Length: 366
Image (cartoon, rainbow, N blue to C red):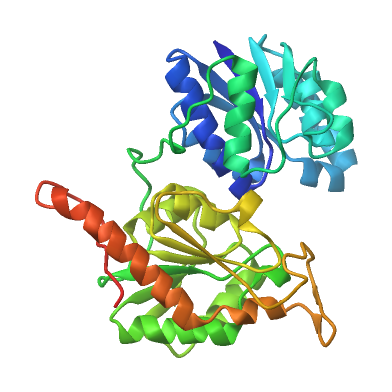
């Protein structure tokens, strides 16, 4: 069975779709997926063994440079490639107007959520086969349900399988810390999702006191500047160079744990079964929380407006980029949650530790 999956962005959303492919592969061992994805995240579909090839879009760049893109023939080349195959099933797992347009252009029976289940109402008009998929559930469960319904197999009740455990990840171009180290992901697409610099400093200091190194990834010049500001003055904390998503996954696998705000790398860390603490204020993990066996979500408290899903914080006494609700999550609380996750991971690993080789250090916090 040849299936086209349309899911363009973003990092976390793409990671949360991987278990649905694992379900389909177990139901139909010979199934193969082609995946339409934005060029910025093309690595992620390639991580899954059921994906045969990726077809990349660049809708942000295309929109900004439409005339040049048209002259270079990028759009026509993409459409030609998209329509070069007749698929047994075409599934839209993005469900907005952009993904619906791609789905409509593809060749094959088109499936997607019904009018009450799509992200943008107009999207459902592109599908011949429409499925009732509740939006009031975790995204990873939503996509598992959609693929089970579209491909006609029983929805599994097993935990999500991201099919990443056996993958070999590329190494970092620079040596990683020799001692157990932690990955602190402080950057986010919205300023309102960030934790305060003061809290990060407290956590970095606590990590150093407990003998842990700290590494800080980044994805844009601004995020690099923010990371360099946090790392300044700490010998045990370093800013990573710009890495590919695969290299970042390799860093996470080698780490003793991760602390993340609501951002794409949180989903990657969780999917890799890295002990991961994620911090939520403006957003709610009920629907979009990072998913994995070793994840702890910490939510802001004390504010009736939480979660607000706004990019700026506006309370009765404050208006700006620093979410005031995020200040209620203390560094001590985060460290305690991370230590508990690491202890659980170490306990689970203990029975097979004598026969395991090449396992990453747990570097348990205390």
